[in-house]
Length: 257
Image (cartoon, rainbow, N blue to C red; front, side):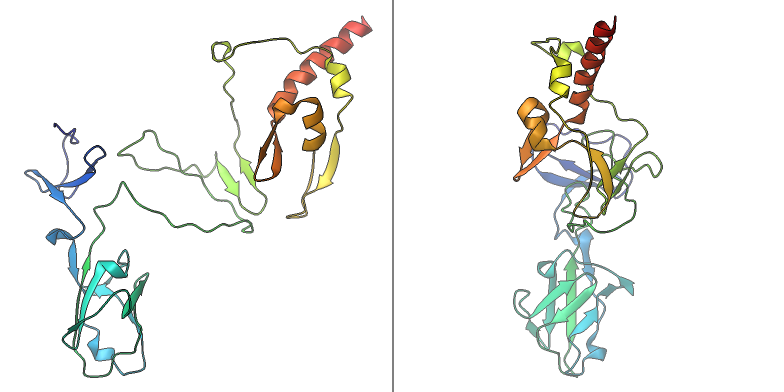
C-alpha cells in the first residue's frame, strides 16, 4: 500500500491517512507512525505537591511552567504518595486544571505525565453550545478542500448572528442550470394561485423581531413543493415563489394588453 505523503514537509508536520486511519509525523528524515502515547507527545507535568494542604482540590496543569490542556482525565497518568491514581474515580481534568476527588494532604509526593494529543490535527472533536441568544456576529468557517486544509473566515462577506438567526452575505447564488433539471413546465394560472396566498407582517416569538413573509401552512395548500417539514416545524423555499411571481406578472401584462 502506497501513501500519498505531502511533498516538502516541515519537521513536526502531521499526516493522517484516512484509509489506514494512522497518523504519521515527519522527523526531518522519514515519516514515523505516531499514537497519543508516542514518546514525542508525552509531557511531564510540573510538581504541584508544594500546594497540597488537605483542603485544595484543584491545581493548574503546567509542563515546563507552560499551561497545557490534556484531552481528558484518561490522557493523564499520575502517582500520588507512591500510589497510582484512577482517572475514573480519583481525579478529573477540566481545561488546564487537575481536580482531585479528595484534597491531597500536605507532604504527599506527586508525579504525572500527559499523553499529548497535538498530533490529532485533522480529526478533532469540537465541543459546542446551542447558542440562540448571543447578539453578536460570528463568522462561519470555510475551506477550499476536503483534507489537509486550513479553515478560513470572512469578517465582511459572511457572518451569522445567533440571537436573530440572520445569516448575512452580499450575494447568494442557487444552482439553477437547466442541465440539472427535468420535467420542466411553465407555471399556469399563476395569478389565481397568488390570490390564494397572504403576504403578512408579524413578530417572531423568540426574539420579538418584526418581519414579513408568508404563513407556511397556507403556502403548503397551494404550493406544497415549496414547504419542508422538519422537527414538527415548517420552512419555506422563498426562492421558488419568485418563479410564481414572474408568471403572474406576465399573465397580468397579457390581460392589460
